[in-house]
Length: 109
Image (cartoon, rainbow, N blue to C red):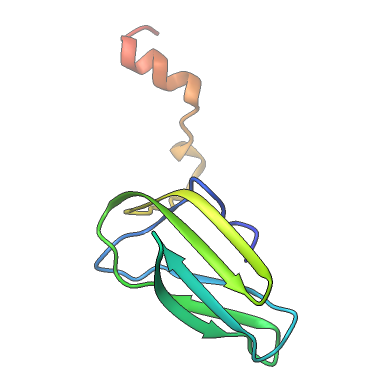
């Protein structure tokens, strides 16, 4: 798996389909993707050693368990949620530190 996939992550929910990917040692090897004990995708490792799969569109919520298996290798990710994933970037005025959250919430300056 790519190193940013892990337990307690959030993947994009329906109507979009989450894309997961990783690397394999054996080109042509099957990679099975199982969510909550049901196979939801199967793919193969390409000649470049990479594999990828689009998961079925999944409604917001969870937690889910996603298991990837290929040969004798198994990776289990627990407490996976599906939801809207937002990535924000922009100007320096977008910065809002966590300590400012509690001050804003209590109304203190």
